[in-house]
Length: 142
Length: 233
Image (cartoon, rainbow over all chains, first blue to last red; front, side):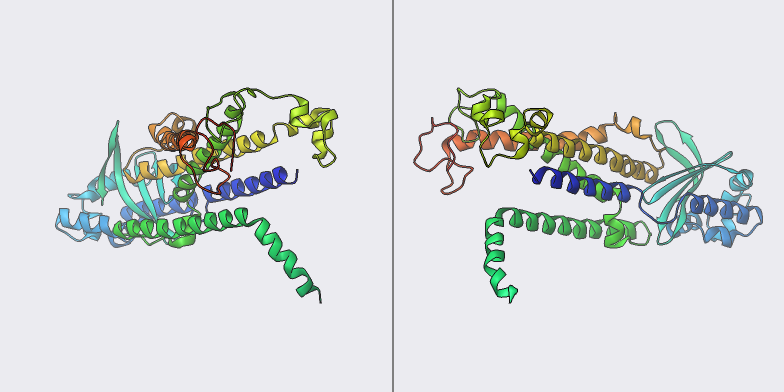
């Protein structure tokens, strides 16, 4: 007779642990939105290096490789990615979606993808437009 | 003074619960090993993507880990739930996993030793003739079923996070939980586990008709006929 309640308690404890795991700690929605706000504030201020520091290093390297100029220059150069990004700067954050170590921040003018790295978020793709069933088409991505 | 006097009792308790203890230890060892090898794989993927590794604790608190754990849990408890309940009504000639061919159904109170037929050492709720007897008569299936449903629910909750994590990594929009329940990912994780558990039960029921493991209560005694049903060693 003791077995069934004990098993039920153990199961409840296990499920509580699962629920806790599903909502695991770490940088949250506000942090992801803050990174995007700071990224676009840096772009709007012409501080490409500050914006570049918020990118995933792989994305920064790919941008520099594709544009032929340093990442910090490309992000504010109207002839490079900076042209598209400048048009999208200044918009307020509408929604943030978190899923594990990935996040999506939606503004009125852009959809930005981020990944958790250590205690913060880094931008993995920015200047993104939906393409239906296909992945977003992004101006800057790794 | 009490230490040496208790020792034989402790040893006896360990011996008489050795089956539970061994399986408990194997479970914890397997879960721990899964956590470490899973974390190693996850960290390798993180580093390859240019991100900082999560570490073991970060991994065991991630949905990626828990969806893998719970998709297996739900199927195991479903397996036993079905095994416990379907063997009330379905039989297999020659299998030690089956009841007698003429004992199909819930059986009489006398056979089940409940109510007026309860024994002095019967559980208290088996002696009761009211709702307690009805609940206790199905307590094993109820608990197994509850753990199955809870694990499956946990699989869906952790699964949608893990699925959306992959969606975002691949630059797709995330989906809500209700939509995830109709996604192939949820049913692929579910059905791949169900089929393996059902195959294992089928194999156990059929193989044990003809094959033996001397001394195992899950097998018929070695010399018992293939046609003997509901006989365990």
